[in-house]
Length: 347
Image (cartoon, rainbow, N blue to C red; front, side, top):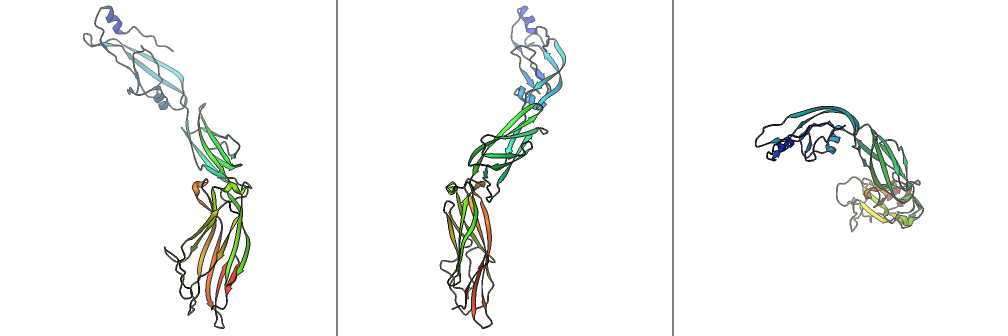
């Protein structure tokens, strides 16, 4: 709808051959009303008296979608600064409905990698959460390559599971008042070690336990685990920071000392590794001491998954002690995963 205006004052002044130096007074637009260009191209329009405001700022003030709004436009024509003090002020009232093209905003938060499930360890799914503004809209999720499967695609939070190694772009569309905003996040689908298990166990001479372990890849190809490693961390109980100090007697302090915690790793592309529960040498006179207890975590880590965090396969308690039999002889015993080693009698 166009506004009908009279000729500006300066045109009347020009017909009188008066000077043409005039001071322009802009239209004043209030926040929450619509934008109408009702004057010459050299007349500035402002929103809320802020010359830096724009129609985008006005749209943000109104909000996303189509809105009903009303305004009153006051037009003040040019004032000739030298001779005349004012021109006639024309005032118009206008009401209407116009769309404000301001799309809603949406963002995604959540992990950027997921492991292929295939019965493997770790969380086989991740959740991504979208946040849309203004509130009150609806969400729709989609993916691009088929490397992931999405669940709950019409909610703010979507569940993502991995199908095959690679990347997938996951997009959320947020709809409100007939308009849409979108956001996307790239998710890496990675292989992980799986089916970690014991392959052998033996009791070796002098009360030493030996185990071997192996694992697979969730893809079926162990070479896909090039970004991963598998290993152990053993924590000895009942002492403060620093190396573990074996009670003596009955144990001789090993050289070097036992590091606490004890950590060992191998590349996950290896077929497996061995693990031994050994002990220091013994020294008398033998005394019955508090059990030496430790906790062993078998674990895995991939640099391209969950920021390289470690994940636990299985936890084993390990117990060692020296005790005296009724006969007066002393013996040593170690137990892990139901397997026991003995030195009986102690030398």
